[in-house]
Each structure stands twice: as structure tokens, then as C-alpha cells.
Image 1 (cartoon, helix red, strand yellow):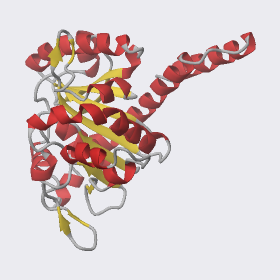
Image 2 (cartoon, one colour):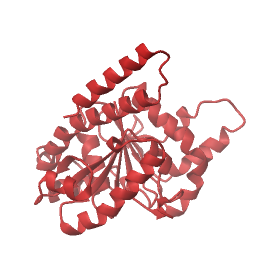
Image 3 (cartoon, one colour):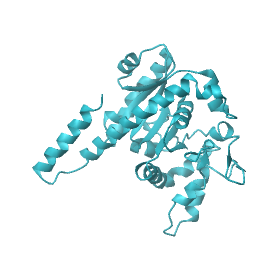
Length: 301
């Protein structure tokens, strides 16, 4: 499947887009709310979603902010961290295959996550690569320090390891102006950790510009677009009982159509990364690697 992270240069709809893509996925999906400014799912989309036969309600005992304590409690043992993380997953709806990791309840909790990023990233990757689930990350608004991703105010380790980083951009002049320096900074960040340009794409929210125009202006490929739909966006932000009209809305239809191509792009990016990291044992193997890479590149359109 794929590990896809959504971020924004400002408040341009990354959380709404991530929720729409998660609910629209036809495959099992984990939505990880890693916005270091604080999560909104628990007070919005998840507020009327109960868990288990006991009808457990989401409260402050569940979520990303509790993982450092859970990790500390297992320190000194060889225990797997996966069960602790699983305790903090919450259903997105009444299905058995859409779950979320609710985010921080206080931005000041972000500093406590520094020590658990490697372990949490490993769990996200296992969920993606071994369980074959889609993993969507709401990375929130980008923050920078000295031209690099801020070590505390962004989920940097996850963004640098994602198969695809999607910069969510509003389809207006102001949104594109703010996105342009973010594209350049993200391209430099991903290049510094050995990632290629294919690991960064743009998701446009709204109408009024052609995807080709936005991609040319920003210097990054536009991989998907979602229409601005007030009714559907309001439900994704506030939660409650999903109206039938939301399921058939332009936003959710576009999200369903976008997930497949985004997943395929992320898979190709991962393949290229894996092929690029292999040292061929013989010239024959080197030729095969080049052939496979060329095939992967040729299928990108």
C-alpha cells in the first residue's frame, strides 16, 4: 500500500483532505494525526464515534500524546510497542478497517515525542508494508528552523520517510504564493535525506486553476485535486452522523478517485528509492536494475 503524508504551508485544508481520503479509501486505512499544533479529530469527526462492545467514548486517555508514557512503561523490556499503539487507535466509522490515531491535546506535548519517532515510524511502515494498509498522515502546518523542518514542531522523521509528501494548496493566488517557498524547502529537505523529486507532490483544494498551471507555477507535480465543498468539509470538521449527501458529494467522489493514483505514485516512488539503494552484485544485476527502473519510470504517466 502506501505511506502518504499531507502537510500545508498555512491552514489550507490538510486535515480535511486527509480525512476525506481516509474515509474514501476502499482499502484498510490508518489515519495518523501528527499535527504538532494539536489534533482536531477528537472534537470533530470522532466525537460521536464509539469503540467496542462497551461503547467506549474517546477522551484524553487516548491518543498520540499518551505514547511517550506507554513507551517509558515498557522500557527495560524487549516488549513490542505495537500493542501500546493499538490501544490508542480509534475507529473512524462503523467499519472494521478505518482507524485513526488521534493527535495531541496540547501543542506543548510535541517535545515529548522526540524519543518515540523511530518506533512510531516503524509501526506505520509495518502497517503499510506488511499489513498492506494505506497509512495517511496529517502532518499539519509546516514549521521551519534555519531552513530545515523544525525538529519539534513538525513530524520530520515521518515526513522524510514517507513514500509521498503531499503539500495541500488552496487554488488561489495567496495559497500558491505561500506554497512556492514551501515546495522549495521541502524539495531541499527530501534531497538532503536521499529522496528524489518524486517523493513530493501537490494536492490542490478548490477550483479556478488548471492543475498544469499550478504545477508549473510551483515547480512540483500536482497529483490530485479536491473541490471545495462546504457541506462535506463541515461534516469532516465537526463529525456527527454522516448525511447521505456527504457520501455523494463532489468532495468525497473526488477523494475516491484520487486515492488510487496517489497510491500508485507512492508505490513507484518507493520502488525507485529501493532500487537506488541497492548495490548490484554483478554487471548483469546492474542491467536488470536499470531495466526495472526504466519500466517504473515509463509507467509513471
